[in-house]
Length: 631
Image (cartoon, rainbow, N blue to C red; front, side, top):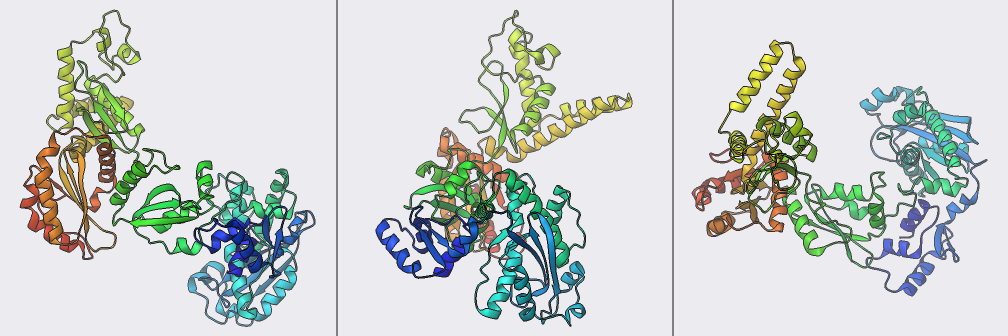
């Protein structure tokens, strides 16, 4: 326990409050602060590795007491290792290269090959050029490590991805002495997050290229150490420009979040590593157990790990929340679709403070054509409505829907302006009406009956009942190309592709946007059955796990009983949210499940035997069998 607290404090030169330390020891602590203070005093007070500042009320690791020293005059030893490959171990190092840096100058170096006593993996030899023959006569780690530590003295150890290099040195030190290698450590990858925030890749080559540093003798210990040392010199200059003058400030800077404050994680790393790698919903909890946030994940372990890593992508609001999270709980759902639906319901019911209503819904967009107005309007919307408008989609973004809207409106002569029209000959149409793209019903330039015929032509096309628009565009394209008007031909070709894609969306997913009926059978991540989803009348009416034929029989009975009732019932707000999630899943991931369209209350009953066989096959590895009526 002491070692864990010591490791935590070593990474936090500014120290930590008793509350922070107690959160690493107890779950749900903090209700008796007097006990907590006494507990830490007994646990840490007699250990020479710890000190307590009564004024700041913070515990520190004594190894960090040197942090008050200025950066000027401080020695840094930049180290790079080559290894046999694999994780840190006492006998994995094949080369140690190091450069001492003082006041922004490279002053001396250290280099030695190391005999690891075991073969070097072939891919490592291909990368570094170090062979088993080269290290055969080299010193073993028991001789090389003390020589390196003597060279390093009391300097701060620096490495590009210090977790790797210092991790291997620590493993070797533990093997030889049984003790941890307690050294102040600086990581140039972490500093790159602070000084090069827009750089997406922070490899040694990428950072060096960005800073204009030449890369010579790559993938050898001393060569890479020199490159990292030059990177450090640039970062020390930039730190000084920020007003960072003390060693403690510099070491703390590498752990700072994007808002400049320390990145504090109260959830133990072991707990995060133990999370399941399956789809599900997670709750982030405060110190008092209060629910702060609800989220979903395709792989819970990866998603939670990304929350608690110091990423530049965290917004100020996210960082504020992360600093308050002390615990979490997860709910495995069997599928990503179930996770999205459960997340939506729990956010609506529990109203966590760091969730924004509706923000968890997928980014989808639809084209909406009104039907109750004299002059129906074509528009882009982010949500399926509860009206009886015609919807086409879903599209992956608002921009994609807007491009489709422009083509459809131009080809069929539909208005896209907002508001109810009051046609008047004296009205001045908008720019689209003036250039002839819109028929300008606002200026009474088209009769209502004629406009309705254009709307009907549009619907006939998207429903697949009329191919004439495509034929006319194809003829126009070919004519433009024959006349060497290639820009006009290219524009016609783009319109053809857009209309074809739009029609396929309408025909492929209309059971969602037209409020039709279908069942999805989706394999679970664990392979022990399936998740069944039944949409009736455009709403998600049933979501249940099915592992045996009895579950399918229950689902069939539910669909038969509720089918007619849901056909004409208006969609509620919650129904719209679930339909949006279903539409996005079908758009992006529908190939992962089996879909059965329902043309009546007994459609599922007629396919019960086929579905029972399919359920059995879902529990087996390999591709799913195709059966008639399922796509």
